[in-house]
Length: 156
Image 1: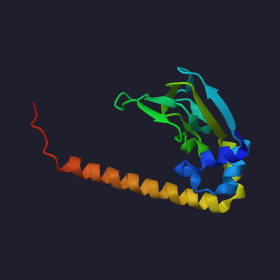
Image 2: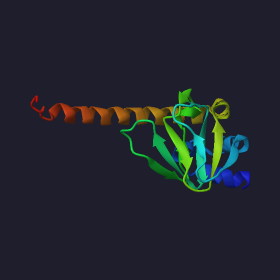
Image 3: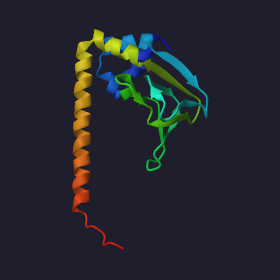
Image 4: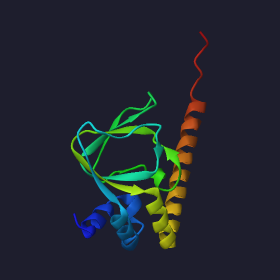
């Protein structure tokens, strides 16, 4: 793929699209493409995360270390490790290729350098993170209200 093809593909990822074409050019030039065989593990739950991956082709099964969460399958256009692009974190799930796949690896250092050069993109990203955090808090408050309103089962 050419750099312009990579930029066009990365533009389809909602979180990255808003950064603008010039910022995405920096990411496309500095990112690495990687082929992942079917059954190969891309990363393991609990490992330190130093990059994000955009799935270009194929799909991955995400298996959470929490038994209460079901496995999910994600495909092309999905950004894995979004938070790892801006902060030190650990992988919340293990990602295993469900089929032959290709990913674009964006390192945190590349992403942060891009944000330094494009402060408007950094502000847009910050605003999106704040909006998502507010939405998550609202959803958690709604769930808490439903739980508080449900009758308590009698002791056994």
